[in-house]
Amino acid sequence: MSALSATYMHDEAAAFAHVEAMLWANGPVCPHCGVVGNAYELNGVRSKPSKKNPEGVDRHGLKKCKDCGKQFTVRVNTIFESSHVKLHLWLQAIYLMTSSKKGISSHQLHRTLGVTVKTAWFMSHRIREAMRNDNTVDFGSGGGTVEVAAIKKPEMRPYRELGSVEGLVKTVGRDGYGRPIVTITTRLDGQDVKCIASDAGLDKIANLAVSKVIRGLRVRIHGVLFYKTPAFLGHIEVDRTELFLAEDELPNIDELIDKEFTGGLSSVEFIKQVRADV
Image (cartoon, rainbow, N blue to C red; front, side, top):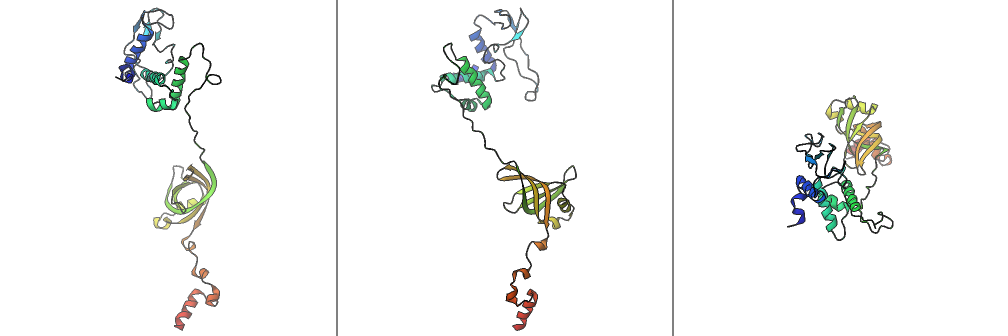
């Protein structure tokens, strides 16, 4: 049977009993007064309630010395002291680190034990410290090879910038402060972006109550662009708004037809002339 299948590797009460049997062969030793074998078990004691554990958690292995009256557990004066990590997880970590020929990184402990990287780093360094002898030197310079977990720092993402975005009005509303909130669909990539400000241009849009009037209205929003990622624009704090009416979206036909081609005639006059000639 695998050593990791042992009861004390998975059950907290069994883990305390296992460590007590190894450290207290002649009975509980009070870490406060040093008296041996003169303490009694405190059963049913729970920790203070918290958000994570509203009813508290069982305080396994809690004892009280009959001589000095102070409480203690087998964790005191060990590498397990002042740690919220379960004792059976500590035993698993010790086994993994001492049984691996090439060592084990904090990142591997994090994945195997299901704890955070920070907790795994804390546990591994305490265990390595406990494995030292009088002939060893501090970790680092002169202390030989130390395996560490390489954690890549994420690249900085763009946070905000000044600029402008053009798009079509999608929805209109107001927040709790009465400010207009206009959602536009950007022209370039089709993202829905929320625009917020006490800007006259946005007020004008928000006051257009008829949905068929505002739907598809083309606008250009100027202000501070807030990005969630380099490719995703979260919202805009508006400084200025440009509105484009429907007739402004396409050039007039007279702007497209060359006057030299029509002989100086307008498009309507030119078409009448062509029809008359036919």
